[in-house]
Length: 251
Image (cartoon, rainbow, N blue to C red; front, side):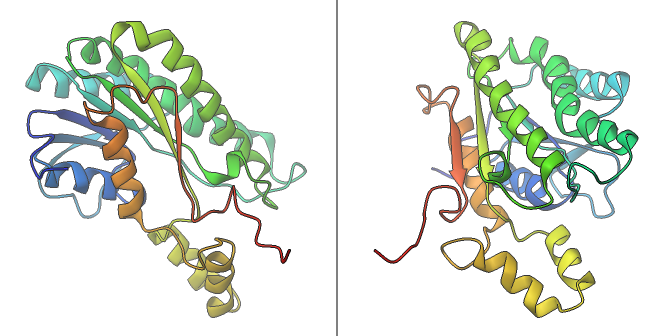
């Protein structure tokens, strides 16, 4: 990829203030794109981006900020739907109101962003939507029932969206990361009774023996969004250190 491959592109990233979303926004900025970041707040706004303050649970807020950004720049070329929250739980844990809230953010939040962006994506000559899934959609992990369900929904939704939109020239794809070394993971490590052990647990569950870097996920997003990836449609690109596919048993 050249350093200016996205120089003429208008990009919206939801949940772009931190973690994976921030790395994605940084990658597009480095490629010369015009980037709008949707987040509820940003303690340290990312240089070179426009902060579009909205809660992805609010239809009107999401639509208004995307409409304003698109009006300013004439269109949206790429939407990266990434905003989401984790929820460690078995099926018996937590009140159902909490479950509804996570589903609202992790699934309906994507729907709101996509609905709001579609009229503007239709004005692009190389429109692309990239959704963020997780290795939990295809790998059974303990205490991840709800989070896994939301990410499984995103992968299924990606394929159906791709079928609906391919004839309009709007490509829809998905990235499925493993355990990504984000500030959230750092916080969970710090809160553990034995932080060193907890970090080792996160690293050891990838067959590579190390966590995925946010920049690796960002590069996968850039590939899926690139106009030259025109035959990559309805795909799930896995960036998980072999977590979903490798079984390192002795033969």
